[in-house]
Structures are given as C-alpha cells and as structure tokens.
Image 1 (cartoon, helix red, strand yellow):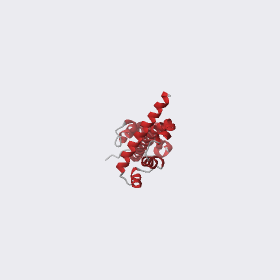
Image 2 (cartoon, helix red, strand yellow; image 1 turned 120 degrees about the vertical axis):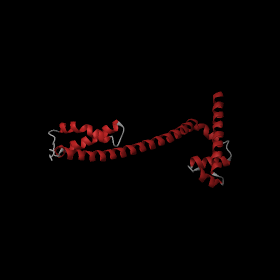
Image 3 (cartoon, one colour; image 1 turned 45 degrees about the horizontal axis):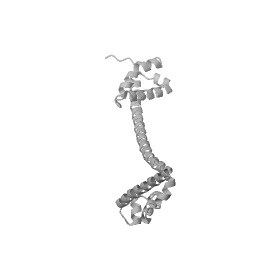
Image 4 (cartoon, one colour; image 1 turned 135 degrees about the horizontal axis):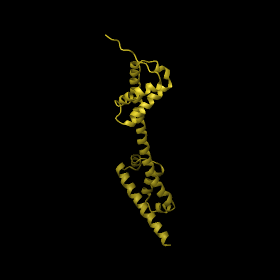
Length: 180
C-alpha cells in the first residue's frame, strides 16, 4: 500500500490559486448568489491573510478541512448578518413610510394652521373634545372611546367626519380670502 505524500504550499499565492475555486464551490453550499459566495470567500481569505504562516504550515489535507470549517462558520455569520440587515432595512422603510404619512398631515396643518383656529370654531363641544383627546393629548381610539363612553369604532367614524368637516371649513375660509 503506497502512502500518499503530503503536499505543502510554497507561497501564499500558490495556496490561494489552488484553493480559491474549492472555497467558492464550498460557499455554494450556503448560498446560490455568486456575489454572496464571493463575499464569503473574501472574508475567509482575509482571515487566512491575518496569519499566513499558520496556514502555510498545514498540509493540503489539513488546510482544506480547516478551510471547509472556516467557510461554514463565515457563511453562517454572513447570512445571519445579511438577515439582520434586511430586517433593519424593512423596519427603516416602515418607519419612513409612517413618518412620511405623518409629515404630509403635518405640512397640511402647518400650511393651513392660520385657518385651523377659525375652523375649529364651527365644531360642536363634543367634536372639539374628541379632537383634543386624539390629536393634542395623543390618546388612542380605544382610550378616547372609554373617556367619551363610546366604542372605538365610533371614535374612528366621528374622527373621520370631524376631520372632513374641518377640511371643508378650511377650504371655505381659503376661498373667502382669495375672493377678498
């Protein structure tokens, strides 16, 4: 039985050239995306470059086993990080969407703020109370309903009607000013 001669690499370049394709194939076990595979391989090669003598001292078989483990750990860490970033991006998008909607409302109120004080005068006392609870005190619909003795759904319907009433009054006041 012939004993296989163990191969050692002479230079880092030789080590890299002979194992790059192998690492890329191994990375394929964790990702189908070529960019991700290249990123994973680059991270592994960066770790190898940090301690070249350590890896150069290993036989081909030892090195390949070591690289296989490094690919696995690096790929799992990379994919976990990617997932966390996707979640953060999704959360940021949702927050941006909510803030944009709030900004549009805020711009409306800033632009029409001078008319708002006059428009509020047309509201009934119970309508003013609902608006104060919801917008000035920041109460949720359910809390507002409890305080006013009505259901949450009723709060939402009344709020919608009151806001429409305010909008119509603001538009009327703006038209009056344009005529003058």
